Length: 107
Length: 107
DNA sequence: TTATTTAGGTTTGTAATACAAACCACAAAA
DNA sequence: TTTTGTGGTTTGTATTACAAACCTAAATAA
Image 1 (cartoon, rainbow over the protein chains, first blue to last red):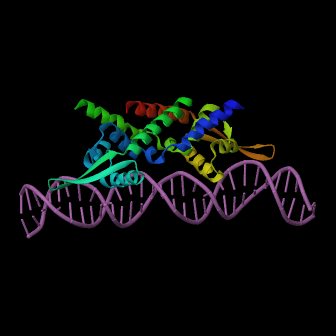
Image 2 (image 1 turned 135 degrees about the vertical axis):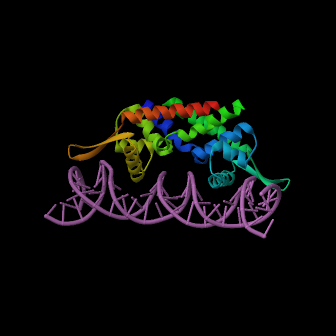
Image 3 (image 1 turned 120 degrees about the horizontal axis):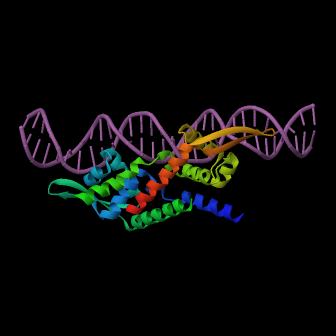
């Protein structure tokens, strides 16, 4: 039956979403970087409410997945980590938004 | 600054979503039960593409969280497991939809 | 009758994950 | 010169998602 098939397809589409982005903590990080273009470690930490350790490991995963760029610089003598979305990360975040919206609309 | 605060609030709102529903495999299960009202184990298994073991453990978690009802019956001599959303599950799924939509709109 | 296969699941084992605590290096203050 | 930030990373652990192995009983084949 046609409608059954398309319901199944709509629902199974959720298996294609990027799980790296889907995880709530990382979704927050990605959402921030999507709107602010660039931010440092402590800013993101305060805005998201994540602990240092947790934020650090989520950032490593996002970087490993090619979604963000991490640049470590010295501002005076203080080390600072600057975060930004990669081009791939930006399009993947847009894909995620589109896919989740479609899923939610279709139900 | 007001806009900064509200951006932060919008983004942090994602921490309040129901993680039991958010996980993709369970999101599929919940979406099915939301639209079909009732279904059996094997139907959900085929439609979602999950393995028996995986489906079984996700169902246990959803039941433990009060989101679904599981009824085991015999159809003739064959055991069968019927699944349906609980009232709580239905409203929680609607909350999830609303929260995710708002998050996605606000970015 | 005695295998053997099929149906309908549950339990077990394991690799990956999310998270916070502990740790580290350095600078500034007391 | 101990102490107190600043800006993180590494380590330890409990939870998880997942599939493989297992289980029970019925239908079918030999």
